[in-house]
Length: 332
Image 1 (cartoon, rainbow, N blue to C red):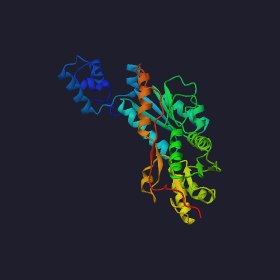
Image 2: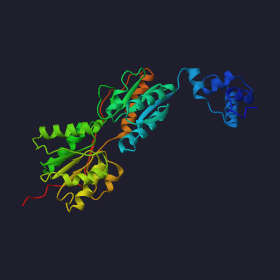
Image 3: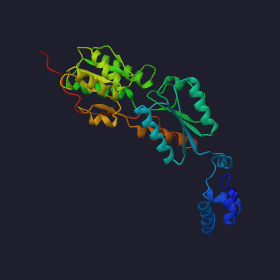
Image 4: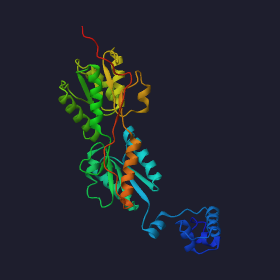
């Protein structure tokens, strides 16, 4: 009888099925050559005993844990959370197990998170790294890994083309007739916030647009609401660094008697589910987080399996035009 103080072992299964433990191991590892009746007897014993294979035992037996570590920031932000869910799904679909740990963006915490994953014998690592401080702690890792963030920062990275997204938003506003466009950036030190700000300033210069002062937010709708009072009076359009700030701007402008889009057009970034249901519905840049997860995991699994890794290409964004943008108000 199985020891009630622990879970059933491979030896308990062998005893119940009246086979050797080597036969049980062969069934678990799907070896060919096992007679169907024997295989079924072993599987029935596994079901009856509630046997669950030990990860540690499997690692010792095969020298592979079949697990991929996922390091993610301790934040409820739409981008990181959506990326995490996409990566977890892609890891499972590839036949591996995700092991996830979240960390605050501080060097000691990031190092501890990486050590935790390594201690659990992960074969590869996906790091969702919106902060530069996280990227700095990953250099020199001796296992396959890549980062998921807006810019490569010198590492193997999968990301959405932030610059192309900003260009699409600016060009959409220019096509409507806007020339005085103001940017509300995310927090400094956040990779994608910096990239979007740099891309906006470059895009404005290349298109000959006046560069209005960039306002600094913190990704929240509250920040957008507060900054609505600080918009340059010349601005007829706003490119916010994310959808939450854009929604806050719309609310803040409405409370000041400024209509969107009749008086000021507003765009966001990310295409959160709520963007389609705002009043007015928000024009934004869609990021395909599921595709980011698929590409990242496919690249890592190819390296683990000794196959050719797919090319490292940025995921193309998609402009989503809704009713928060329109031709600029007529002067006079």
